[in-house]
Length: 91
Image 1 (cartoon, rainbow, N blue to C red):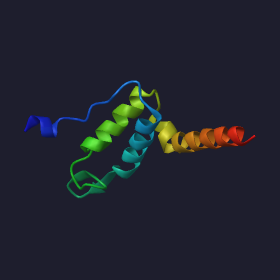
Image 2 (image 1 turned 90 degrees about the vertical axis):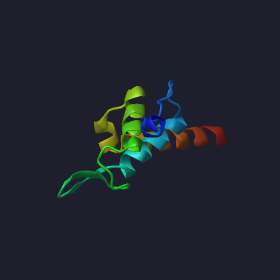
Image 3 (image 1 turned 30 degrees about the horizontal axis):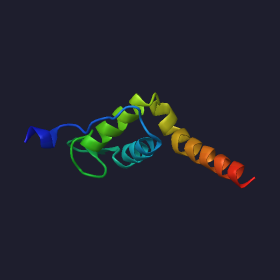
């Protein structure tokens, strides 16, 4: 039973795919105040849920900060880089 409740492993090095999924997990599994405490907005379990913990641990392993996530720099920066690479390939 303890294996079911254990945190998800953070694989290093962190790949771009891991980073995008972790960013989404942190945004979706955010804390929400309830009369009896903070709950995960998605799962309605005590915050932080397993996916929120994994997402934050993965972002930490990648060297990214909560401020970068809050500012929206992580997803936007990746998209800008991908669009720039796509334009370079077209040229």
